Image 1 (cartoon, rainbow, N blue to C red):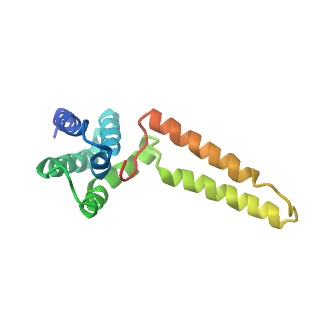
Image 2 (tube, rainbow, N blue to C red):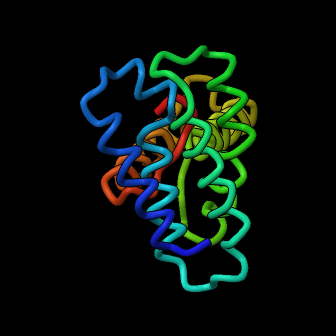
Image 3 (cartoon, rainbow, N blue to C red):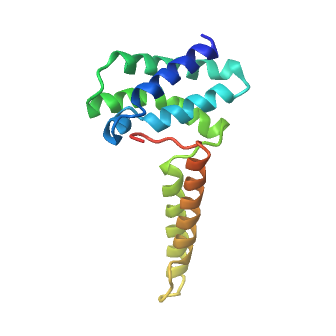
Length: 154
């Protein structure tokens, strides 16, 4: 499989679904597929990305064969079958982000604030939770703007 075939399939995918309503785009993971495919095509190491390129190409083939309104269960299955592994690979190689990053920093802030509260500061304002939450939102916003964000139903 060449990169040109994948680019053509992505362009067909984009042209088919760019004018669809948001519910259909969420069910086919429109933005996630665009971001992941573009980033996989940019990566230099062709040997490691071949598996993920084939996975995305299989997903694009599956979507091409389906009618436009797809079921939520099928959408979830296709996401986990084809897209998730590629996105997880890009989290390590391409600095991709997901909602898990936001939840992790929020949880870390709650833990730090809880420790401070139980050490004796009974009227403590949860400053670390707020700081980490704002930091997480900033990182997520930056990743979305740089097309380094993926999540199911996005």
